[in-house]
Length: 193
Image (tube, rainbow, N blue to C red; front, side):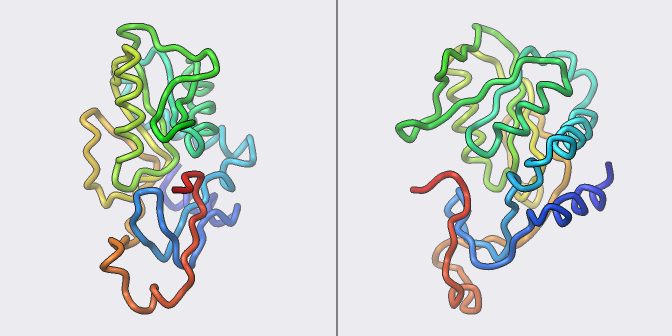
């Protein structure tokens, strides 16, 4: 699947939003990718996951024992990546602000984990999710996401693959341009802090 084909899927599902958004990272942007919309169609989600799985180098795919995704955004694509790779897929969540395994999910000591995200901007959420997996005894062998919004700058400390890279500008709170600041801020993600 080419980047143009991936973006066509986002546009077809009205997942590419324009306005003034405060991202989970705390940064501001005039664009937001509502991956839940592109993933709401099971066939489309499966196609995107298979395309993403194929981009992960074969030697890394062979090492993966389990897929872990952070809730909420990573749950659907994490599940579909598990299906594409033939591996169990679980998720970590933040009931009290810190990622943890719940619902009877476990990671065995030394189990080799692929971390799956929907969108990576700064990598903060990914690193926090990875820390929770390591704390449980897992070994992160690779990470991937549908979308890399970092401008190629993110370093997760493990091999990282994305299906598409989008370089929409993002701004710190004190750097927001006047024309963007004039638009009411929306916080469309699942992290409402």
